Length: 244
Image (cartoon, helix red, strand yellow):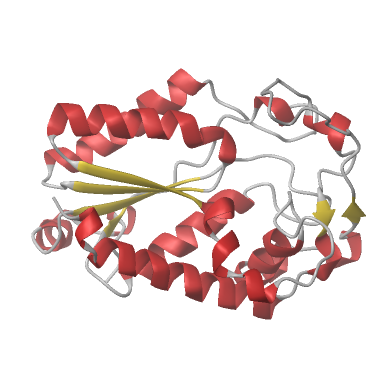
């Protein structure tokens, strides 16, 4: 039986929510992800992770929140973006709906770096207001220590649409990957002061939307990446660190 209310009837949902106090809320983005990968890659990955976790332990899986804050990538055709306040308000409403029906633990599985500070702030607000426990996975950063032994690229294996972004998509949605367009792109902007946070236009740093080497990806690495990520997430959920 599906763990996503989107595909359940209300009676099955009622039975499922009596078995768990946990909801997994995947978030993504619709933005340039190189010339070879689908623009919804972030949400494709987080939805897969959420479903993989729900196959191993009782958990509800919220429908994907597909569009994030991607303003810096707006110069590439097709990129969509919502304002941070809109993202927080919509995600809050979804979370509060699950809280209403008894969820006390919320794991935001977020695939887009631009969403991270706003989901952190929302998590703090929900914990303070409702006494729930919240946590967030920052997907493409989350997997990095899990797959150090799988790295083959000599440049930014976890860059944008690079080795591991390509590998995960080849595993999950190979029909939407155009490997004949995969490319290697080194960062175009040399930053001598990375310790200072500044706004930037992503296209100035990469004319292709890739930062790294997308040609080094393969489905086998993507499958192993997802397997390890699911197991790590299950271990966290079962741990004392995520108990009320």
